Each structure stands twice: as structure tokens, then as C-alpha cells.
Length: 356
Ligand code: ADP
Ligand code: ZN
Image 1 (cartoon, rainbow, N blue to C red):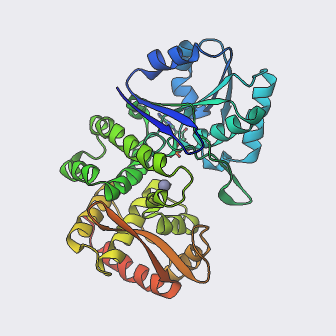
Image 2: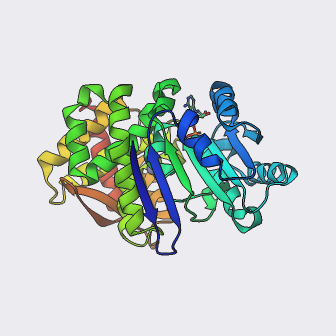
């Protein structure tokens, strides 16, 4: 078992526990402290784990949303809040969110809003949610066609991470989580070495179970230092400017797959601007191994146009990238839209001929 505690500058505390048998042991034990508990999940996860959750938690209200990002909406949020109100949930009660990043985001926001905030326990069931989205207290729903437009920062009381949930995850969802894991590798030399030494095992469940705690620890460390994305937390944006632009334009792949592509492209951009070329090539190869095949990339001009609109950018036609530079090192790089477009064109052609 590994436990990490995050206490933010606002004195919010979150305890993250990585261990086996979460549903049978840690969760029921923790829930004894609450008078009433409400469960939130999605229909896919509930079909697989509902019976076990029920057995573990006992009497509790349940609301299941439809699975998928398309349902990460204010409507789902308010349906959940209605169900919580109808169940008579009180300020000292607790909401338990069991599912991937979508369930975690909507549930985290509902817990933050209900009676101005009740305790929230996150039980992430996807690789992405375990190593990334459940840690750090970001909550949100999509609104007006913009991802995560409405949300708050609020730390969950507990995050219970059990890699056993990964056994039922489709291969694509594993790849999705690998995007964030390789991003952590670009920021942490230890994680990079482990990934590189196990390149042939990247999707093995036993290997993933082994590396989840180190990734949780890495994310927790960043959040501990900078809960509200002031400065350090920007490192977590590595590969993401390109990933978000492609995701918006193309949308056929998962977020994590775009992060793999974005990290690979931004490593190339950095290599042509004085970054450690040998290391950046190794990082790129790791991304391509996790990705398997390189899909057709969106039009560079369109991607540059969309990247300029990214809310993390300064505007005025400049694009800010968090790029890997050398092992464990990153920097913020600002490019003009035309320069970025030229780089996307050049690298797109190179990558298509570089696949392992
Ligand atoms: P993410 O965690 O990648 O942000 P979602 O929350 O949308 O994304 O989860 C991705 C999909 O995987 C959803 O359809 C969800 O129902 C499903 N899912 C989540 N956890 C599991 C699991 N442990 N086993 C099988 N499917 C799962
Ligand atoms: Zn991401």
C-alpha cells in the first residue's frame, strides 16, 4: 500500500491511497464515518462493478450517468444534484464517484456545489483517471461547446486507487492513460527509465499496476506545490497544446492518444531548437511505441489556427508550448502561428516515415 497526502495552500487536504481490494477493505472502512453515502457512476462501470460496490457500501442511493465525454454536461450535473437532494443528502454526508475521468469530473463538481461542498471520495477506474485526473482536485463539465468551461478546484477527501480495475478496461483506454504516463516520464527521469526499460510491456496489466503508484506520487507532488496551476503545474501541459488542437479538429482518437502525438511532435520542435536531440528521439520513440500506428494528422494551418485560440495561450497569434528539453527537463516555448504551422508540416511528414 502507498499513501500520499496533498495539503494545498487553502488548507484543503486530500489523502490518496494506492492499494489492492479497495472495494472490500479501505472504502467500507472509511464510509463508516458517514451517516449517509451517495454513489455516482456511469452505466458501463456500474454494469461491471455495481454488485461489488453495493456489497461493499451497503445501503446508499445511486445515480448512474450515460458513459462518455458527450454526457459531461450541466444537465448530467443537475440530474445528479437532484438525485442527491431527493436522497436527503446532508452537509456531513459523502459522495463516492466510481468511474473514469468523466465521472470524477462531474461528481467532483457536484460534491463541491451541493450545500456549498460535501466530502467526495474518488474511486478512479480508468488508467487515465488513476494517474492523472482523480489527483489534483480539478472538476468540471463541458459547456457552450467548450471542454471543462465550468468547474472549480476542490480536493477530494480521499482518492482510492486500485489497479485491479484496469483488468476490464478496453485496450484503447489503456493507451489513453499511457499518454499521461509518458508525459510524466518526460518530466521525471525515474519514470522515463522505467518506461524505456519496459518498452515491450507498456500495456501489460502487471507492469501498469507497478507503475501507477509512482505516477500518482509524481502528480501529487506537482499539485502539492501548485494546486491552482500558477506555475509549476504548467509542466503538466507538456504535449497538450498540440494534443488539444488535434483533438478539437479531428476528434477521432482519445485524449491520451492525442497527448502521445502531441508529446512526440513537441519533442521534435524542441530538438530543432537546441534540445537534447538524442534523448528527445528516445522520448518520441516511446510515444510511437505506445501509439502503435500514426494516424493521418490534421492540416497544419488549421491546427495552428485552433492552437492560437487555446485558453492557455497569450493570444495575438502566439502559441505557447510546454516542451521537453532534456531528461527530466522542460521549458515554455512561444512560437508564432506561422512557425508552428511550418513545424507541424515538417514533423508530420517525418513521423509518418518513422513508425517502429
Ligand atoms: P477517461 O477516464 O479516459 O477520462 P471516461 O470516464 O469516459 O474516460 O471512461 C472511458 C470509458 O471507459 C467509459 O465508457 C467508461 O464507462 C469506461 N470504463 C471506465 N472504467 C472502466 C473499467 N474499469 N472497465 C471497463 N470500462 C471502464
Ligand atoms: Zn491530459
